[in-house]
Length: 117
Image (cartoon, rainbow, N blue to C red; front, side, top):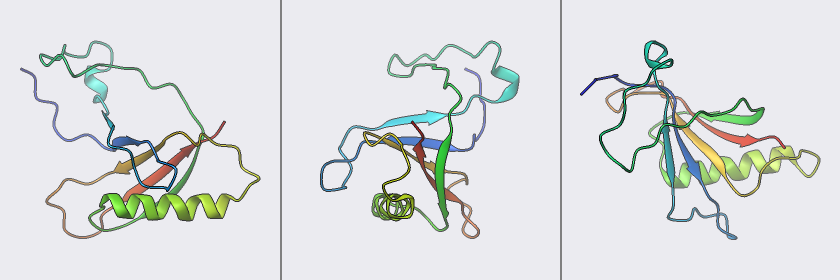
């Protein structure tokens, strides 16, 4: 019953398949605003869980526009190529992040994050 407004970023955990496409399972993360951090409201929907995300070091790339799955896959491939074989990061998932509300037509920000091991 508590409205928290738009949070940023909205993070989607992507699980890549062998061919680089994304598996059909996803996990969406919404940041709980600061004023609710100490005592977040309890979700009324059983499929919603409150989790604490631990600190992490990431490799990131940024791009604009209305991001689609193909964009995230493409930029993940570009990030992988840029990192080469020297960087050590989680290969079983990565984060797809959007920072803007749906009605913002210009200057949109999206990112792909690989979590450093």
